[in-house]
Length: 186
Image 1: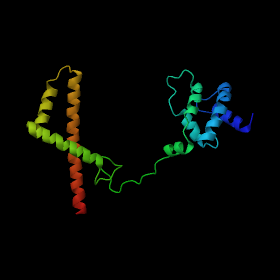
Image 2 (image 1 turned 90 degrees about the vertical axis):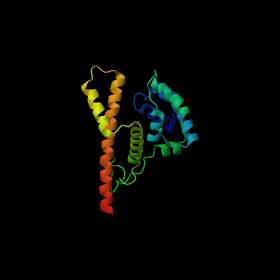
Image 3 (image 1 turned 60 degrees about the vertical axis):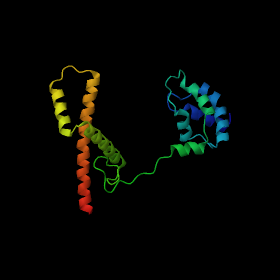
Image 4 (image 1 turned 120 degrees about the horizontal axis):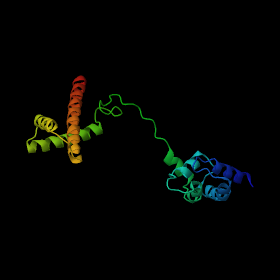
């Protein structure tokens, strides 16, 4: 047995469970692995190769080590695997973080902008139907005071009403914060 073949057998036997091959599977798949590695630019077995071979779940497999043979046939070139598994560059923290989304800048926060747009649409719909915040709150209080056993749909509506009230409250806090920020910078 050549040193390369021994290294490939050892590599297959050291894969993480449940994919670790026994001697029988390792000896069977090692030549196939060496052929694929040479063709696809893998100079030696490494952590990227191991991650590529065990990336898919073993759920539903009766014999996970036996699946390694198929996964060897589906290997991708090394440079593509390395590129796809590269870690993103670390981000610098925002100088003026958004109070609701601290990982983003307060000015131009896309999540807040989306929430504001949704809140604007909700207010337009409420205005068209003659609903204001106070009447919605009173209706919710009356409903909660008179509620008995609730259906799943009723609980869903109640949950949506609570979420809407919370979103309105957060939007007003965000607006106040942005006004303060503008006053300080202006």
